[in-house]
Amino acid sequence: MPGPVQSILQNSLDGIIIEAECHISNGLPAIILIGLGNKAVEEARERLRSAFAASKLTLPAKRITINLAPADVPKDSTAFDLAIAVSILQASSQVHHDFTNREAFIGEIGLDGIIRPVRGIIGKLLAGRGRGIEVFYVPVGNVEQAQLVPGVTLIPVTNLAELHRNLIGATPTPIINTSNGLQVRQPPKTTHHQMGEVIGQAAAKRAMEIAAAGGHNIFLSGPPGTGKSMLAKALPSILPPLTQQEMLEVTHLHSLANNDYEQLVTERPFRSPHHSASNIAIIGGGLNIRPGEISLSHRGVLFLDEFPEFSRSTIEALRQPLEDGVITVARAKQSVVYPARCMLVATANPCPCGFYGSTKPCVCSVSDLVRYRQRISGPILDRIDLFATVESIDHTQLLAATPTTADDTAAKQRVIEARHLQAVRFADDYSTNASMSNPTIKRHAKLAPTAKALLDRAAAQLDISARSYMRTVKVSRTIADLDNSAMITPAHISEALQYRRTNQTEAI
Image 1 (cartoon, rainbow, N blue to C red):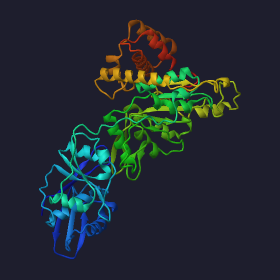
Image 2: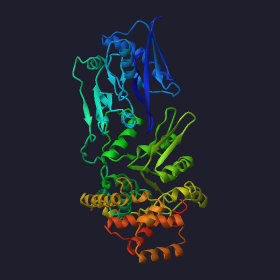
Image 3: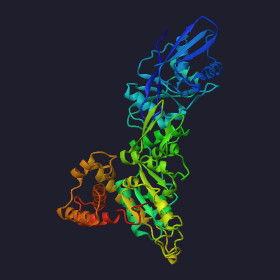
């Protein structure tokens, strides 16, 4: 029996090499697939029969046994079709290619022999590269995403007949080397809102800029119609562009979750699920585990409008990912860890009717207020760094003011420069002040003596908890970065204290 043909099983951020072994023996014509494959894998038998006939290739009229090893690992992907087809060609002596353990075949075969793209190609390439595979035969439809992965050799495959000709040397083999990965030019931003379109709200805009600069979670509260949602939707307009590595991570996650096999994600994600979304939709999972909204917003923004209207269990499920930057989805048969390093932007009204504390009368009872505010627990609010109130706007300003993008450009440049300072400080292009641990804060905070004295006095007078104390330092560090200041000064501490939880929000 000839040697195995390799493919890759990959549903999360890691993967294993799958070897397609083929044995042809005398007996009634049949294709037997073993190796713990699901229905999609087993149906490859019918796809192969039609594809071989359409490609004018010989499918031996014998008993063909295909083993997908290791046989004790469940397999649920059509990406093994190509490896199975090549193993049959090899076992039936229709190709005499010198296969090595440095090649892998990935792709789904159609009834007409066309090689169709598959989900999660980036993860498969990363997993294969990490295990010594250098050459990947991939569908043409996956090539654009695949070129984001540096340091691999890609051989695009259009159909089974073309692959057969390439393997026997009848036609030249197209080769793509991705030494540094695909260099993608950033297209213009397509967000629906710009910060300049929001009239007034200088304090809230400043809070959003600080959040963008340090990657902080932010909570916006205020009466309905004051611009909370508009501010949140304008946040991507001042965020820095995705780096190549971030683009690879984000595109990979989105490829796992949907069928956009040819789409490159070149902008920071902005996900805004409805408050009726289920736990699985937010955190990930399902029968075949897929990333949820918190992972699809990785390196971007997760906007939860009307935060208290989400179910209590959904809100509490955000605890681990907001703290650790990853989400662990555990099921009976499988456990998967997805990245979830996103900025949470949550909005809420001060009460069910929305007008508590405003100039308009509130019609809510005390029990209504208590129930509404108890929908969000203290531990979740402890994971939010910035709290800002969005006040009502004078109506005469709404039509008089002219939206401008000049402020957006300046704010974005300040954010980019602040992020660069953090990358240099942490020797990591992807770490931000929001992700600092307590030891990291002690090492990099650099408070001036007068600033520390001010913070200590404020902590004593305002009865600030230990977690809030360290959170204030993180926010102060970001404000200092926006000012291009190496030291945190009393002015930075004073501004950071303005964004702590107030009496109005400490129960929400």
